[in-house]
Image 1 (cartoon, rainbow, N blue to C red):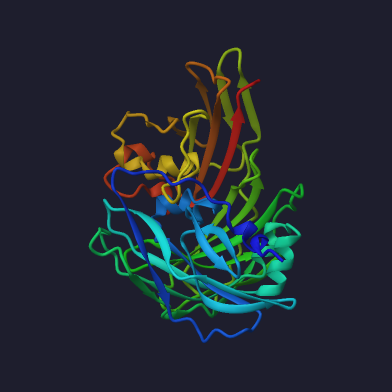
Image 2 (image 1 turned 180 degrees about the vertical axis):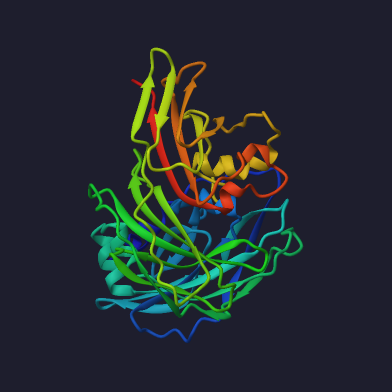
Length: 404
């Protein structure tokens, strides 16, 4: 019996992008409980802490690093490199299976200091294998996985000298609960589903995920840890699938808080503008919003033949745009890896003439960022983290492909 399907849903990773300065950080995650044949798979995922602009551009696939080998009984599986699976032995039916991935690998940008974060997870082994073999929806898989504990490294500049045999200790339990209610419009198709990701702030004002939830109902509980700041940011998000069947977070509602006794109550999902107009003959693109009045819109041209995907740097056009924002000077427009931003525009309404018009190998990505208050235009305030990212309340992304 093959167990390759076990990690079917966890191997949707993207190619690594070679930076001018990249350092591969490798090591172990310590502090797991005694692992017996308890029909539970234990592991950890290791991630860089995220800045506010990176968090705003996060996509689900960004959480999975480039593939590496993992031992599962007689099989060798391809799984994300930033997974760590301690040695354990489980049974599927009558078949004993040994599982092990004794080292994680995380490609890091070596030009800036950053914390590394590990979150321990557990899931019922037999149920997980059964669902994976049936190619069950992501929500069914995620709903079985729970976060147990976490650990954080110091904020360091990763180099050849300190990136080998790194040990991350699972020092904090993820056990405190906070209630939420989330009333929103139902999903429109089987390709859509809702999830919640809960983040907490690190001592260096970055963000790390501490819990997650699939199959989200109208109410529930999110877990957090007292080992980090009580400043929390929850992402209530609707996911659809793109043309390659990859999960894309297209509508995100951000909810901030630091009071565990408060019930989180995000208001629905952010909505697209009520009016669109794209006239290919005149190359004009316009929009009009009735609901969203505070925030900004960005338009990005995506050359589908030049576009490079990456891990944690980031894969989606919005994410790469945000990650490179500090390189802008006022009036300068980004053109990098097949992405060209046309600039930031008022959220309520606007019109842009595309010169030249969108070509057959291009797409136009519409990015709408709602904020809780009026904020400066991002490329007019490049000396600090733009307010747009720190005060974001809603995010909507829509891609328009060129006419065939």
